[in-house]
Amino acid sequence: MAQNLSTPKKDAKSADKKIVKIDAHGHSHKKPFWSQLGPKLLLPASILLAAGGLFLAVYNTMQILTPSEGYTLSTGLKIASGLLGLLMAIAGILGLFVKKGKTLMTLGALSLVYALVILTASAKMGTMALVCGIAAVVITLFYVLAVDGKHEVGLFRFLREMIGEVKKLTWLSGKELFSHTLAVVVFVLAMALLIGLLDLAFSSGFGALSSIKIG
Image (cartoon, rainbow, N blue to C red; front, side):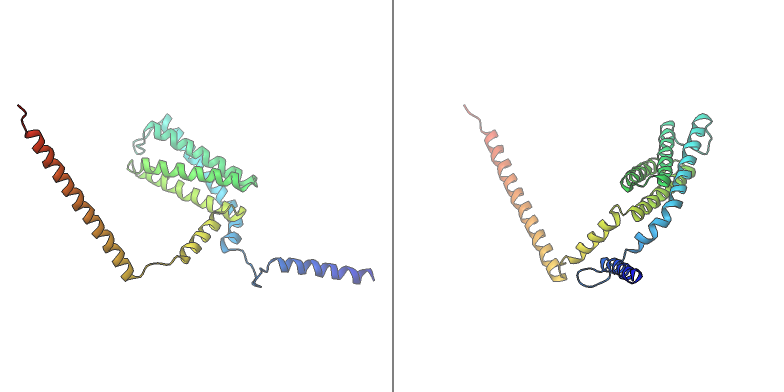
C-alpha cells in the first residue's frame, strides 16, 4: 500500500517540473542555444585565457629585460601588456573555481576593454604586437561570452530584448522619409538665409554708424 502512495507523489513532482517549463500561453519554454552551449565552453575558455595571459605576462617581462628588434613596443606598452596578461591569467584561473558570474563577468569585461586599448595603441608597432593584441581581444571576448552562457549574467538577454524592441519600431516609408528630409533641408536653408541677412544688415548698419564723424 505504501508503494502505491509513493508513486503518485513522484508523478506529481515530475508533473510540477513539466509545468514549470510551460508558460502562461501554453508554449514550452526552452533555454536559448547559447545558454545550453555556454556551460560547456567556460572550462576551455578559462584555460585558454589563463594560458594566453601567462604568455603575455612572461613574454613582455622577458622583452623588458632582454629586448629584441622584432618587438618594437615601448617600455610603457610592454609594462601595460604584461599587466594585461596578468589580469587575463587571474580571470582565467578564477573561471575554473569561482561560481559567481558577476565577478567573472567584471574581470572578463575589464580584460576585454584593456585588450582593446592595448590593441589600438600597438596596432602599428610590428606584426608580433598586432598578433598578440588581436589574440588577446579574441580570447577575452570568447571568455566573456562563455561566462554569460554559463551563469546567465544578462548580456545575451539584453541583446535579445534590444533586438526585439527594434523589431517593434515602425519605420518610415520611402515617401515619408523623402518628405521629412526635404522639410528639414528647406528649414535649415531658410534659417541660414535669415541669419545671413541679419548678419549683413547688422554689419552694414554698424559700419555706417562707425563712419559717422561727430564734430
